[in-house]
Structure formats: structure tokens, C-alpha cells
Length: 168
Image 1 (cartoon, rainbow, N blue to C red):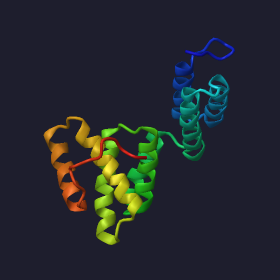
Image 2: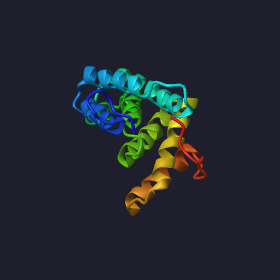
Image 3: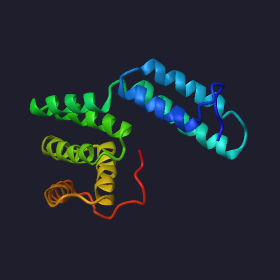
């Protein structure tokens, strides 16, 4: 495992980056991403794969400027005001940051059901619904949440037959 000039491992730097992002310290996140890129510099396949991952993380950290908690709060406020598309966008960003969060995934399906009542869903929205379904099918849920999941999926016409892994 490579370390930066301060003896900090790549995994530790990734953890620090995520913590800074949760605290809203965007500049620190981007700085750590730059350190990570320098840490993995090289031509081997592993370096190239990690570099692609870091490019995606960098894009997400720069574009998503709020924490998961803030995005969920904004989505709740938007939902209460029947602003379903902004609520969807808030939760979609939150799921990018926390891709295994079952509550975000379930809330996304709920919002997509409301959106579908007013307009036809886009291909991207169906893709998000499939990803949320995958998350919710991959882990056990309490019976009440499983019932909500199944109802939302049926309403959206999303199959319980899911791809091997979500595509974000």
C-alpha cells in the first residue's frame, strides 16, 4: 500500500476525504484527491483503475456541494412543498455520496412514484429507480419497508429482476 509524503496510506486519505466532505469542507476534499492522484501515479493497470475511480470521486466531490444530511433535509422540504423534481435531484445526489443508504433509496422510489403521477419518467429516472431497487433488494428490510419497496416498484413498473450491480 502506497503512502503520501506524510506516511498516510491511500485508504486513510480516502477516509479523510469522505469525512471532510461530510463536514462540508470541499476544498480539503479536492486537495486530498490531488494527493491521492500523485500517490498512485504510474502506468500499471491498478494505478490506471484507481486513477479512474479518483476522477469520478473528484467529479462527485466538486459537483455535490452538500452533505448527505443536508441533501436529505432539502429533499424533505421540497417533498412537503410538492416540489418532486428538486426532491428527486437532492436524493439522487445523496445516493451518489452514500450509495448503500437504504433510506435514501426507499425515499427516491417514493418520490419517483409521485413524479410519475404528474409526468412520464425519464430514462435517467428509471435508471435511478433500478439502482435504488437493487440496493433495497440486496439487503434485508423490516416488513413495513419491504412492503413499501414492493409497492413502489410495482407502481413504477420496475422489475424485481435486477442487474448484478447498480450502474451510477
